[in-house]
Image 1 (spheres, rainbow, N blue to C red):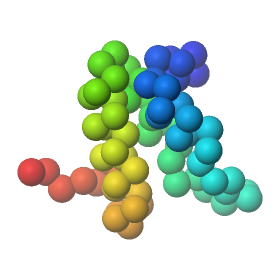
Image 2 (image 1 turned 180 degrees about the vertical axis):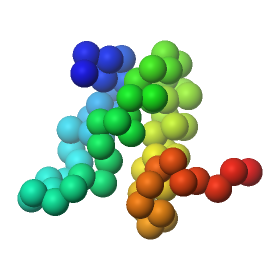
Image 3 (image 1 turned 90 degrees about the vertical axis):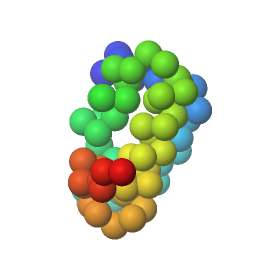
Length: 69
Protein backbone atom coordinates (compact mmCIF):
# COMPACT_ATOMS: atom_id res chain seq x y z
CA UNK A 1 0.00 0.00 0.00
CA UNK A 2 2.82 2.41 0.77
CA UNK A 3 4.04 2.13 -2.83
CA UNK A 4 0.93 4.01 -3.88
CA UNK A 5 2.68 7.09 -2.48
CA UNK A 6 5.16 6.73 -5.36
CA UNK A 7 2.43 7.49 -7.89
CA UNK A 8 2.45 10.81 -9.72
CA UNK A 9 0.42 13.37 -7.74
CA UNK A 10 -2.24 13.70 -10.44
CA UNK A 11 -2.81 9.93 -10.44
CA UNK A 12 -3.12 9.93 -6.64
CA UNK A 13 -5.70 12.70 -6.94
CA UNK A 14 -7.62 10.81 -9.63
CA UNK A 15 -7.71 7.74 -7.39
CA UNK A 16 -8.95 9.79 -4.44
CA UNK A 17 -11.82 11.15 -6.51
CA UNK A 18 -12.95 7.86 -8.05
CA UNK A 19 -16.71 7.43 -7.57
CA UNK A 20 -17.97 5.33 -4.69
CA UNK A 21 -19.10 1.82 -5.55
CA UNK A 22 -21.92 1.43 -2.98
CA UNK A 23 -21.04 -2.17 -2.24
CA UNK A 24 -20.53 -3.11 -5.87
CA UNK A 25 -17.20 -4.25 -7.19
CA UNK A 26 -14.86 -1.35 -7.94
CA UNK A 27 -13.98 -0.80 -11.60
CA UNK A 28 -10.36 -0.03 -10.73
CA UNK A 29 -8.87 -2.13 -7.98
CA UNK A 30 -5.64 -1.78 -6.04
CA UNK A 31 -4.16 -4.80 -7.83
CA UNK A 32 -4.59 -2.94 -11.14
CA UNK A 33 -2.63 0.03 -9.80
CA UNK A 34 0.29 -1.92 -8.29
CA UNK A 35 2.21 -2.27 -11.59
CA UNK A 36 1.88 1.46 -12.20
CA UNK A 37 3.26 2.28 -8.75
CA UNK A 38 6.24 0.01 -9.43
CA UNK A 39 7.35 2.33 -12.25
CA UNK A 40 9.34 5.29 -10.95
CA UNK A 41 9.02 7.46 -14.07
CA UNK A 42 5.89 9.63 -13.70
CA UNK A 43 5.53 10.08 -17.47
CA UNK A 44 5.38 6.28 -17.91
CA UNK A 45 2.99 6.03 -14.96
CA UNK A 46 0.67 8.52 -16.62
CA UNK A 47 0.67 6.51 -19.85
CA UNK A 48 -0.07 3.31 -17.92
CA UNK A 49 -2.85 5.08 -15.98
CA UNK A 50 -4.43 6.32 -19.21
CA UNK A 51 -4.28 2.77 -20.61
CA UNK A 52 -5.95 1.45 -17.46
CA UNK A 53 -8.68 4.08 -17.42
CA UNK A 54 -9.19 3.73 -21.17
CA UNK A 55 -9.59 -0.03 -20.90
CA UNK A 56 -12.24 0.47 -18.23
CA UNK A 57 -14.12 2.94 -20.44
CA UNK A 58 -13.95 0.65 -23.49
CA UNK A 59 -16.05 -1.95 -21.70
CA UNK A 60 -13.55 -4.79 -21.69
CA UNK A 61 -14.00 -5.17 -17.95
CA UNK A 62 -10.41 -6.24 -17.48
CA UNK A 63 -7.48 -3.85 -17.90
CA UNK A 64 -5.24 -6.77 -18.80
CA UNK A 65 -7.38 -7.51 -21.88
CA UNK A 66 -6.04 -4.75 -24.11
CA UNK A 67 -5.39 -5.21 -27.77
CA UNK A 68 -1.72 -5.07 -28.67
CA UNK A 69 -0.55 -2.63 -31.23
